[in-house]
Length: 366
Image (cartoon, rainbow, N blue to C red; front, side, top):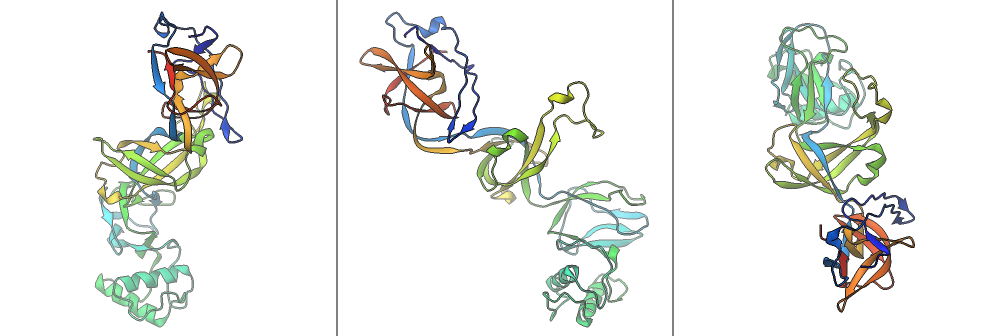
């Protein structure tokens, strides 16, 4: 190998930055080791120049959980007399908890239960109530797109109340119902039976019932995760499942934040902002691992189609500046200048007039 070039070896210091469709590379060349030289001047090992698709994907560590976490506060005063157990799945019309022996039942809808509902009321919450009454078989004949609480709505409410042996008032109290987007799972009880719930004191923490994966990325690197992109998730035990990025959080929190929520001490200035990424699994019902299990997420990243690539450690830092590879042909070695592009999976995209698919390039024997 020519003394004008030096392999960058495994400790290649690479900085990637998007720059007009390419990438900038910065590296410090290292001294040759004894393993890099042979008596005939050839490199100790070679690898082929390949043409194909190259991905800049990376692996990140995440946590298996459930969708749409939210806190639930009691709608009225009293004493908690019953709570659904942690891990319990609650469906439409199921009990979440009881205050003074009176059940608060789950109904589906995006608008919270912020008021009692009675004849003459109008709004999206009235529509939600009608849809739930119909789904439960109590609202035959109701128009779910009519936002008015009609006499027919009151009749349907009375049927629902009779089914639960409640006073048949035809009105729904604020503390009778809690609306949520769909079936809910009790992640944890924030209060206990016998407690007196109050403002700012959650009764329980709920999530959706579908499994999701969450992970955090440095805010500066969050561009590598794009909504809708496919990912692979390696579960405990080695099983791999697929999914798609559902959301990339718009809010960032300082890494290493104190438990009390304040800034960290000492090295606080070095803390990096984080962005939460949520992955929706393609077949969540097939995932049986425990809640909060650690998982590994494979991000696809950018894909370059049909490019030439070589192993990263085949790059040379040329004495005259720039980068090259050592091409081995007919028992001889020569240096070829190249322009590095995207890095991924241990390879680097390269362009150069003298470089062709199938050529053998020298690599150090590490």
